[in-house]
Length: 152
Image (cartoon, rainbow, N blue to C red):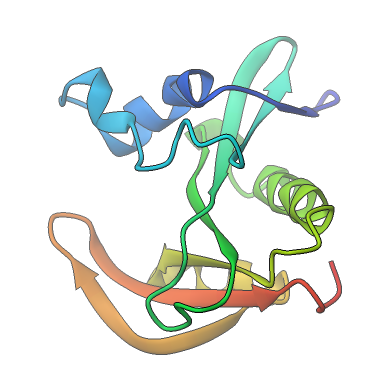
C-alpha cells in the first residue's frame, strides 16, 4: 500500500466516508453528530493519493458514567471497506490521542463501539466500561475508555 496521510479536516469532509458506511439511503445531514462544529472538536481524515479512505471525529462530550470529568468522545471511526484491517484505524486513533493530550484539561477519551470491534480497542489500550447494550437499528455496543494519563 502506498503512503497514507493523516490530517485534520472539517466535519463536512468526514461525511464523504461517514455517509456510505453509516447512513446510506438517509439524508446527508444524518451524518452530522452533536457537537460536530464545536470549537474544541477534532476531525481527522486518512488520505491515500488525495482520496479520503478513513475518518475519525473526537467531540467534547462527557460520558454518562463519568459526568464530572472533562472528556472527548471518539465517533464516526470509519474506514472504506477495501482499506480495513490495514492499520489505518489505529493510525487515526493514535493521531487523535496525541492531539487530545495537548489539551491538559481533558481527563479521558471514551467511545461506544460495536462489540465485534472489542479487540481493536483493547489492543490500543482502552478498557471496557459497563454492560454491553443495543443501539436500535445498529447493534450491540460496549463503552471503552482511556485516561489521558495512560500511555498513548
